Length: 191
Image (tube, rainbow, N blue to C red; front, side):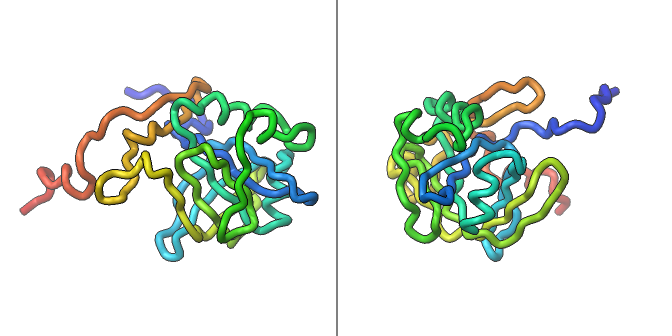
């Protein structure tokens, strides 16, 4: 029998993403999030959730754009820092030694050193309680050449994706592939 843990945010693992936005003065800022994921295929869209208390929350609302910056495992401490400091008080990019690069298709900064960046235009704002969900249409995905396979697709093992476990508050890396999607389950499909 399973043990009840109560109504908690323990869906695990979650992503480790840094949401980038510009503040009213044009300074790049960002916040680490764990509440996010793809939410539509057409139009290609991503949902992220931020607490209204965060500086980035107001910046996303004002600019109607954001980037999702996905770090490699060796950048986990940098990702964590973006969740500890406030953009109201410090230039996070300068403090972390990271480069804010203007996105090509939306009015948001990206983190040059991170291997994967998703540029998003804000579509919907949904107030959920403590968090606000921002749904952004994906305008482009930019990948560092070193994380692509021979066919030009993202190789998660080369990227070294960081994930987060909300219950333990620990960061982890992903392990090796377990098999091909839409394929390994065929053994259970009735003929």
